[in-house]
Image (cartoon, rainbow, N blue to C red; front, top):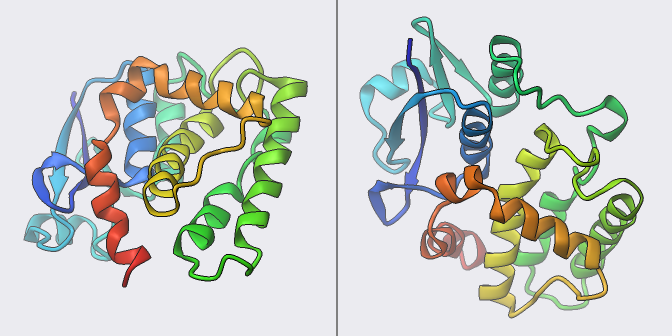
Length: 212
C-alpha cells in the first residue's frame, strides 16, 4: 500500500518541489525509512479543491495512510515511526529540543532591517550552543546516528544558509567548526539530495517575507 504525501510546490514553478522545510522533514523521514510514497505538489497560491477537503486549513504537509489523511509534520513523523519502526529515528528525550530555537532566530534575523536590533546576536548564541552540544555529543545531535531532530534541522539549515547568504551576504562563522561539519553531513545524505528544493526556489520563497 503506497503512502501519499501532499507537499508545497515551488512558488514560481508549480510542477517542481517547493521550499517548505516541514514538508521536507516528512520526505526525509520517508526516504530514511525507505518507505515508497506518491508525492502531490500543492500550489499554495492556487490550492486544488481535493486538497482543501483533506486539509481544511490549507496547510502542508499532509500524509495519506489507509485512506486517512494526517496533518502536521510532527504528528506525521511520529506516526511513521510507529508504522515503520526500522530503522529507528527516535531522538533520545534529553536531546529532543536541541537546536529548537535556531529557525525562529534565523527568521527574525533574515527579516531584520536594523543591524543593531540583536537578531544576529540571538542567532549566533543559538548556533554556538549547538556547536558546544555537537562537540560533546556529535557528529549528529544524538551521536553517530541520524535521528528525527536532525531531519527537522536539516531543511532549516538549508534555508538559513541560502537565505542569509543571498539577502545578508552572511555565513555561519568558521569558528563554529562542529556546526559546519554537521551541516555538511546533513546536506551530503542521499535522502537530503533527493528531497531538497532548488536554491532559486528557496530564495523565491523568502523574497516576499524579507521584502514584503
